[in-house]
Amino acid sequence: MIVATMAAVPLAALWPLLGARQDGSFAAAALGCALASLNAVAAYALVAWSAGRSNVAFFRAVLGGTLGRMALLLGAVAGAVLGLGLPRLPLVIALLSWYVAFLALELAVVHRRPGTRSEAVS
Image (tube, rainbow, N blue to C red):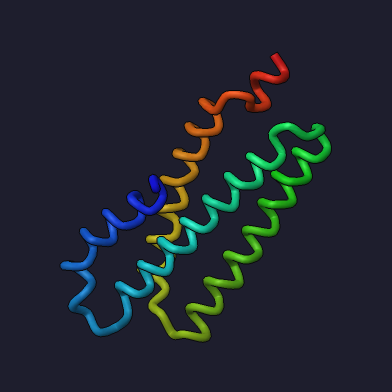
């Protein structure tokens, strides 16, 4: 719910600025938002899955998951720009902006979540 709200509110604010343009800027920004949102959900799912497992499983999930998610994001951005012809700048600005926002949210949630690795170690 929080991810959907964080994605929808800025997109609604961007609509008056980019919605009237006919070059696909709003579609590119919306795709960047969607990619960042899916990335955040996948990252949280991997951390939640690995929370009660061994350190090896935890690092494989986190590091391997990061590598896999970055490869998928690269493929999606390349496909959107080259295949769909979406404008690069709105896509990349939206993707990076929401990525940073969701990363901060993810760190805050994982840090406060009971039973996380930091509590298990200490």
